Image (cartoon, rainbow, N blue to C red; front, top):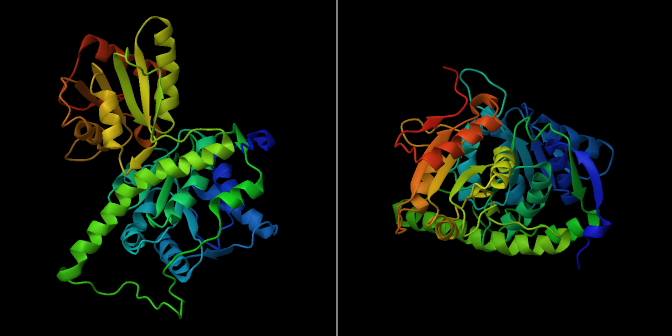
Length: 394
């Protein structure tokens, strides 16, 4: 039954939305360490705990490395674990991120994306999440506070699905989403609790009936096969994402595709492919151009790991012009999202022209005139093998 009519509409930032979802989920353990612009997530959640609204154990660790270590211990011992971080905090976790995924622990982390140093910058780009994209975590990217709220709830059930058992990152743009007030729809508490259910990790470290070992040495005769199994679980996560999204949609009345289409159909001639809040600016411009007769649209990637190659290939193979907007560099290589789109179309029998753009580094705005220029480039057939930069100071 759709319970959307019983929901509450509230003005919240993306940080508050993440904390509100965590309150309703009520994880057993939340290890924390403050870093801008993630801090409001755990700050709001700590208020819930202080007010007695959750029974969660909050662990104030001495660093983000210790945060993820504590989350691993909690999850392995049989407690649902969640946390949040940003930028250098995520980078400091890197060693332990692979431990979490390699041990198949369903930890959920909210990430307020922020530039990595140096120079020091506290504003948004995706260099933190892109830098750990191969750490074995499922990665979901959110455009709005509503998506942050919904995706946090979805992520718990996805991570804990018995065919997945992998950690999940829910990404939102630092300050742009994490600190911006938006009207969002909050579910009643009980449907959320029913949806995520009780935490039932099948390999509890504390089980006396079924003893298990975590973190043991694994030599060449077994490690390869173990990592293949982990890779298969990541691919399975793509199927389970659809299943879990469908179940959540019956409660919220909203859809949870792997990627969102805006003004894209069989007549579309040019599209921008991007992620997170930039999609909102791209959609606003595309809508204005569409009203002027230009057949343009936007493809917003929501599920970045595992990447939806097959579904996207069917969509993009006949589109004449594609621009990919990345909010991070891949030094010495092409940008990450652009690389994935190239791979998506590698086996397609198509003469697509694809152009790579980088934008928004260090929190610089993506302006409407930048998006208009991208569409103008596509219309003029101005393609290059080199990455172009939007709103770059000359």
